[in-house]
Image 1 (spheres, protein in one colour):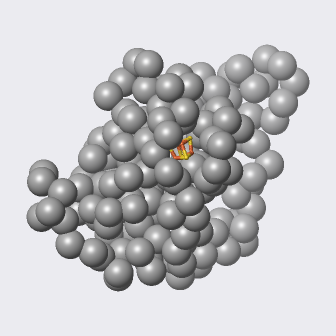
Image 2: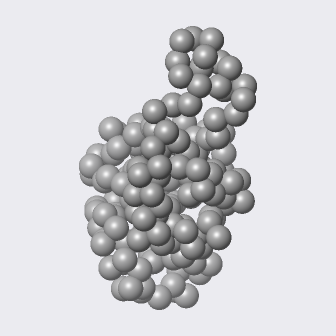
Image 3: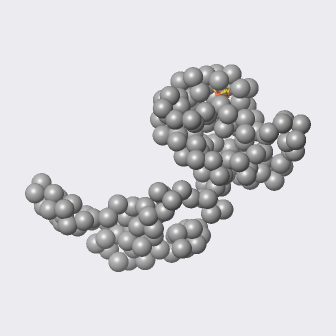
Length: 168
Ligand code: SF4
Ligand code: SF4
């Protein structure tokens, strides 16, 4: 993309600011974050580039890029950024915007569906029950799985936040 083709995107800027990413403006593109990012050593993810894309308002490109999900939230970049940009907060804000608008990776969908349907991201299989029993734990953990009122509350929260529409 030629930089002169990029138009300001004040709506996205406001949306990102509302979600906690206003300080992306502080980034002066030194590249320290990318140089230190352990994920970037193994993937095509470049955190400096993501910050620049956010500054430029490239929302469509950001919500559709797989690299958005390659940050492990290890916080190495946050510790080393000379401008104290809250990089992880910005990555999470960008992810929240992407998911709220229906951009969820296929691999994430089953996990999100589990959370909505049973209240757990990971299912408690028969094997897990056996393992729990073997170390002296109840087969079913004392979570929403044991408490229908808590599960009902969780369902209400997920519906109120629109999570049900994302997994449907
Ligand atoms: S280290 Fe901070 S200032 Fe430097 S490119 Fe990364 S986010 Fe921007
Ligand atoms: S928090 Fe994410 S972007 Fe920052 S260094 Fe770790 S993996 Fe890279």
